[in-house]
Image (cartoon, rainbow, N blue to C red; front, side, top):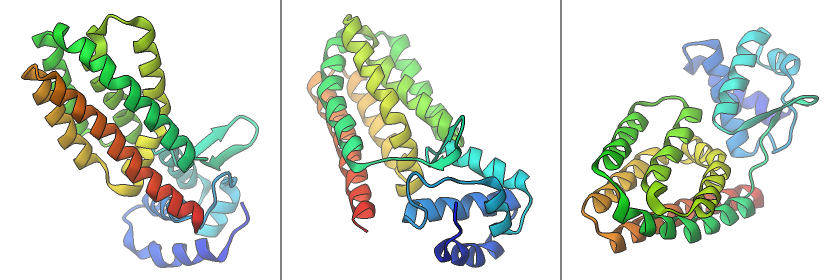
Length: 229
């Protein structure tokens, strides 16, 4: 990655604010990626970053792993780490597919959901409240949704639904990192679970549609603005 003036300015500005070297490197690179100072697809070479930050390679390596967990960086076998390619068009496409599939899966599943299923969904919400690892948050979010859809009795529908929840995972992690989306998402999860406990299919399906659609709209607007800039 060729060092640019924008990253150098961020490094100079951020250094005094962080407790550890890894935290300093990760937070500064995260800001540079989210703001577009470092473009999608840019290689993140450890040696060059270590020189730019004036640190050893070890905190750089750990920072890059943390960025990978946030879906901001990707590791490729022959290229090493690069800034993740995340686009407004792809995020909107995944959101549209989820909005089509998930209300159907939920409506079919709701009559068969057991008290144990609902309790498991509640436990997953509690786990998400206390989870600090963005990668783990994506997994818990997927498990929460699939727990509510699991009694649909439509294996192909559920396979497609889970496939697109998996595709949405990196966008969700990006959204947590860029937009502080987690508190809102958790409030919406609780409202959805309450409607399921009440057996209110119409409200539950409306809530899951809004949950997916509004998240996609927020993220798409952010990414379009970044791409335009």
